[in-house]
Every structure is written in C-alpha cells, then in structure tokens.
Image 1 (cartoon, rainbow, N blue to C red):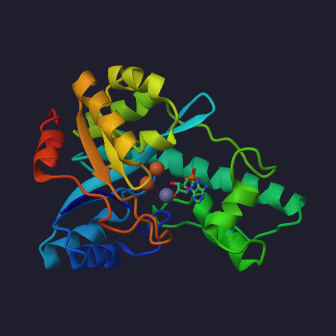
Image 2: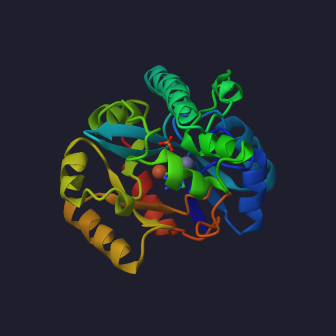
Length: 269
Ligand code: AMP
Ligand code: ZN
Ligand code: FE
Ligand code: FE
C-alpha cells in the first residue's frame, strides 16, 4: 500500500518522523511520502527509520502557494532536497509563517484569547509553524476545546484574528519544485474550490492532481481522475494524516503501484 501525503512534527503533525514511519509500517504501508508544510526537516529522520523498517520513503513537500485570496497547496515529490533554490523558497515560507503567527497571536490577545507564541516562534531547527500549532496553544491556554474548535472560532478566514498570507504564485512554487528535479501535484483540489483554474495550474507546470484524498468522496475522486486524463497529467493520492483527525487515518487513502509509476514517469531530470 502506498500513501503519499503524511505530516510529522516537522510541521503540524503529531508524530515524529520516526514514529510516523513506524506507524505507517505497522499499518501495512510499503511506500510513503512525508509531505510537511514548507519544510524538508523531517526527511532525514524519516529516511533512516524507513531504511531500518524496509519502507520506501519518497522525499516530499507540501508548499503553500497563494493565488488571490486563496491558498493553493502544492505537493512536490522526487526532488533533490539539497537544491538551493528550493531551500531558499522554503526558508522564506517558514520566515513568513512565523511573522503571520505573531500577527495572529497579537490579534487573538486583543480579542481576549491571549496565547504565548514565543516557544513556537523560537527557532524550530528548520521545522515550520502553522495555524494548527496556534490552535494547540489556544487549547493549552483554555480558549478552545480542540484544534477543530480553535479553527472554527479563531483561525479561519472571517475570524477577527485571521491574517491572510503572502507567498509564491503557483507558477513560482512549481518552478522551484521542477528546478529541483521534482514533480508537482495539486493537493486536495476538492478542498480548493477552484476547478475552473486547474487547467491554468497545469499550464503553469503542475504535472499531477491529487485525485485521491481523505476529504474527497467518490464523486470528487472520479471528477479529478477525469480531469487528470483530459489534461494529460498523472494522479497522486494520500491520507493527509496529521495524527489529530480520525477522518484521515494513515493509509486510509492509497494509490496503486501503477499510479505511482505514472507519477514518477513525470519526473524530468
Ligand atoms: P496553515 O499552514 O497555517 O495555513 O494551516 C493549514 C493547515 O491547518 C492545514 O494543512 C490543515 O492541517 C489545518 N487546517 C486548515 N483548516 C482547518 C480547519 N478548519 N480545521 C482544522 N484544521 C485545519
Ligand atoms: Zn497540515
Ligand atoms: Fe494541504
Ligand atoms: Fe497536507
């Protein structure tokens, strides 16, 4: 079984890279990709654990690009994690994430939900911060019951504390992935609500669509499979496991070996 969308404590997942790989192996996965948000900091530890357990680890990333007032999540696979261009883009992303978190924390304090973000904003050794960690801080401070509750009341667009992000365009993010020898896949298009823009993303260099995802029902998967066929791109798929949501279990969404081979065939080195 193959699951190409997993998060660790290098971003907003709850399991360390080593624990994630062990959990994946126990769930019967033989090939996985760790796709943390805007960081590759978990990959070395995951690779060591994967080697020890006989699991194939494909280096992965989930980059947040920005198009207008929308975040567009792009998955990258098979890239060189030491590529300087990609490294610089990811560093800029993480720096922006910390600034945004501080802005949101200031607004939370104004609305009576003060949290201490200093531990989050402190150097995380290449790990990235995001709203789920702010959600954890809100829970710890007693302002929310759990991550979901914190998002609903404080962290989504429309809430007073929400701060829009800035970031690279889809084209710029895809260019960085491709220049590093990787292939880019449009993450969970069912959550994006921008089907009419997918052809443009493909024109910008996106080579796959994440047709299979925990939040896609059968109709959504069929729609994105058909779209991938029409646009002549591959599909990818995975659970988007973070360890915090029973609706996204590890290995709950997989792709076949043939589908992985078609994704890998898009790599142009
Ligand atoms: P950020 O990187 O700060 O944009 O946070 C995005 C991440 O937050 C996503 O990848 C999800 O893991 C999580 N997330 C987004 N929206 C929600 C929500 N409504 N409830 C819970 N988690 C969410
Ligand atoms: Zn996440
Ligand atoms: Fe995502
Ligand atoms: Fe994700």
